[in-house]
Image (cartoon, rainbow, N blue to C red; front, side, top):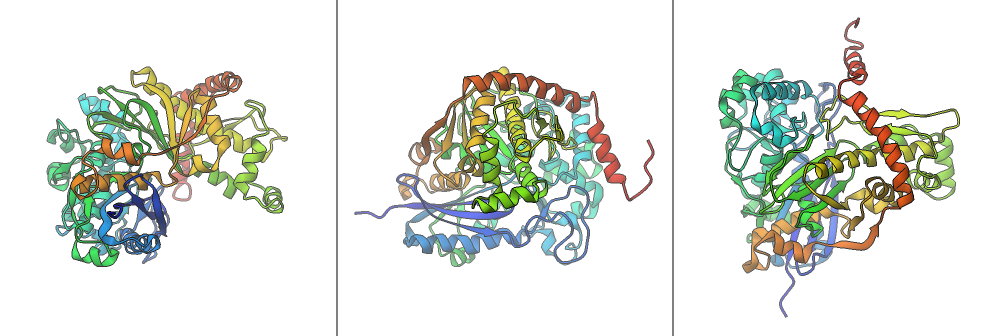
Length: 562
């Protein structure tokens, strides 16, 4: 009897990376291993020297990515006790847009002594929001010039994406811009380390770098209007772009030794974490929105034609599944909001009560919040603790909680925050559905759907849609392994197409969350109030949140007088 074939998927998140070994006959995850990033997320200063970072900075050390491969891949092979020769593919997914400047040998500039002390030479994580001014400038000029590409991104390019981050480097550290041979996504950089050859993927290029399959990047005249140094931006972005599932190459000798994998192991081009999750849930047709729910949420849906939707992060042909237009939207903070509340706002009495009951604080809050009916607390919140990604695309917005009294309890606030993120998702669902991109049912994966049943029921009630949950607890990594199997191909024991792989490896739970129609009616009323607050504070009628942030930025630096 022939041996089973396997693939490895590596999911590079914000705080850690995890490897999963997957059996290709049924998509079963054999083993997994997590490696926390040694340097974490750099928000205050560089790790090697007391060099302070600016407001809303978020950097990473590329050495941490290699450490994930070095530690986690051998561990899953050993724990599963499989023959390395049977592991035919490896794929990776990454947060995005997470970018870094490199020299001609693809060495990150932050690893070179002459640039190491400059924060702009380091990896800029997706949630590095310090390029908001550059994003504002880009959007203003694109609108004035009538650039057609802007419609493909919901009318605005986010400060989280690649081009505003490169603009920031050109403005604040022109010497780094000039010395960089290229600017590349971290997912492409890791694949280049594994194979010794840079092959850029169509997903990050399309969603995060304003690249289009038919038209390429925006014209040179537009780039020059952004910055005079952008005269050679085409050189800084050069490199052939390949479809998802393409084989980037095989492992170099170095990574064969580091991982224990065979020299015949195929390496897939890189991918984005949320996008790789879609086929891993078996979603390969329109009408089904996949929500990757963790610290933030990415919302992915397929369409048969290109349509323009306010605030979407992008629509890319073949961006998720071949032969479909892939749409992306998102919320910048979800689990992060709940974590903030638990870590920073919950009183000692709640912590003590949870301890006595043998619960963690999240579980205690969920259990007690579930005792309330929709609307019973009298609270309503805006979910902008980390700005708004869709549909307003504005990182300068901030959170809001309305309706508190002296009788308000922690579990009521917790429930209001859960509901706020659900209202944010409904805003996105409605925007797609009303613009001809059908969203008939929801699929959810990530850490939150596995942990918080109340949250998922609230989402079903607020959106009035059935929610199906991923069977995998590591859906992005499963998706990465799926693309690794496609890169290997059928002859090696993998698959020749993403659709074929998804039909075998994609898995969901039998349990579904169905909307409670009594709750739906109440949430419809609350959602109308949410929309009023959303538009009042988010569409320019009252910019108090932005004024407060401006005062915050200047506080301690100069006397600020309006």
